[in-house]
Length: 552
Image 1 (tube, rainbow, N blue to C red):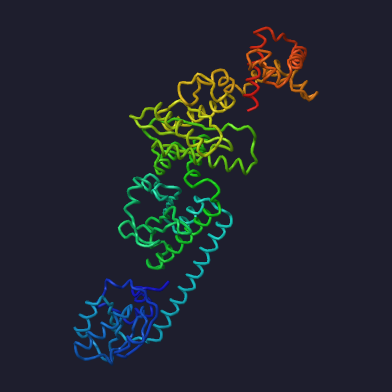
Image 2 (image 1 turned 45 degrees about the horizontal axis):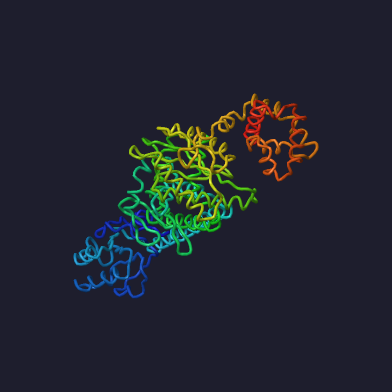
């Protein structure tokens, strides 16, 4: 907010006096809070620090010790600098004792070789200070208004980060406590360079306090959190001090600090407001998985962002996994969201427990997706089997519904990640209707061969020929049920699922045998088929499975 000594010396009103720095040249970046004119040798007693002293030196001590004491007292109170005008006491040179003392104390000492009106200097500098204060107020108001709006709108972390980057003109990174990147904006720089080796670089930056500047890297870092619980850091990387040519580095640093801290407060507030939603890690993982499935992100973007999250994908074997929960009833919307969030966190906990590397996030309102990244020495079956066992134990402990675990074929490149995720999604949809203990699976999860006919029908569910087949086989029965409010289609399903055992089917339908037999006869009349013929029953069973796939 305040001008520096160097900036004051560049003012037109000062340059007319032909200023020359004779000591303390390396400290010209000191801030000038005020200009004070005084000829008193004991003026330090009325100063508060940050003043630029203007004097003719007419009353300064004559002896060496007195001059040293005068400089020492000014330095101890924190004076910004001392300006001595030639023409009254001194003419060509200052006393060597005065110059030596100022150099020793690091106090900028300037001589004016031409006489100036001191009042003109004070007016110019004070106007500069007041204008700077007003500019800081305007800047502060702009920052607070911007982030208040973001807070009210419930902006996502990536939006907050982008806003900080735009206002600072520099790259910004939001990381968690493990130094994994949650969101970033490159400010036009190369993302590969910006995020290369991020975790190790970030761990080496540990400024003191909640907000601090690291001079080695040029990073400005502030902690993000609330109520005594920090969950991340917001990093401004090497903001250019010349972003505005008329702004001093110290002033720019002050503005950047205010900007970064206000953004951190917005992130912390929004985290509190959405604490019942998914965590930032899950949200970031979900965005990447969605980008893979929808082609919203390029292969290089996916690889780069995943690597910054601590999930390397390049040069690894990738396996898509989709999880769905079996449940008897459909919960209300809010309850469903809470269940999915908890289930996602359970899946992430199973990944951590088995020390796997994977992206974990919700795919839609019902499914959780994983993209497991395996190294060259990792055993795929052992890794997936261990994850499945861990997940089922954690689900049981949390009293969550039984999960369906579906796995796609492994792929060797990031560009093929979508294929394994899509295959896992198809397997999960097909397996969801399978009994929990059915299927001759070789592991505790489903793969495409395990869902067999049901899986094939699911893959063909959008084919018009399959839909035509369903209508041809079951259309009259579906129409009859709709018209009479009967449940003949359900009776047929039970009969076929019980292996055409009429007695077992009647028990499963909770009907007497005569009543159940009567319903089967109605099915035969409506469809014009003989349920004692194996081929007819096979066609109807396939049609029922296809109907399930189409309705999904």
